[in-house]
Length: 290
Image 1 (tube, rainbow, N blue to C red):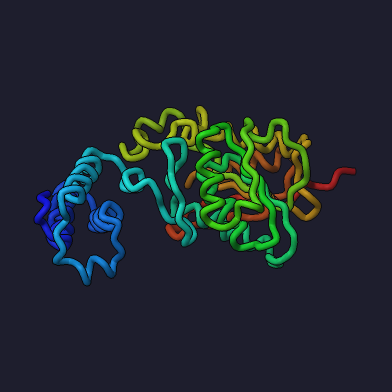
Image 2: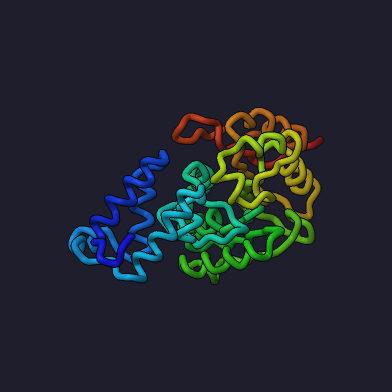
């Protein structure tokens, strides 16, 4: 890329280079806009503007990183989720559109979004799930838990950037260890990839996503067992009428439902994502005991 190359020509060249590597047009546009700090309007109205030396060098480096297999979200350091911007770090997953299904299912359990509600997000990562829920529920207060302090730093920054920082707390702990209280809504997108499967994932995932956020143990269900045991035994628990929701792998819904039943929870249904996969498993509290 040369300093005299125009913005429009740069987009064309980047698109061609990525397409030759089997990478879609959207990545080219994301890179050009982000690296050059442009809006779509800037690109249309100012397409004849030259990149300049700094812009050409930065864009060339970004394209090389993408061609080397680094995801565009990692290169730009941010991604959109639920229509909100989220900064990323090496210790957080890139928010996925599939996970919006978890937010939708959780909100369906909160028909009165203006009432005071307590939320708990287990394995919060970037904080995208908790922040999205807090944006939709203006009187809610939420706690995000994670084992990674670096992830929590990013989650706190994302909460502040999206205007919910005063209603969110982020705590470093191993799942819910050391925490006590009753919550109206407990949500989690835990690691659920079977350990032996990780080597078969796309390089963009296995080489760039944090392993601790992927590895779900031998069968991918270790985190679900741990969370269900902790919620069942307390001191973290569901409030009266509360709901627990998990994101699950595409073939794990039945197994997670069974684990919940064994823990004494009442199944509340399965929600499918836009691709038709069973993506969210809901539990509606515990069976009454005689």
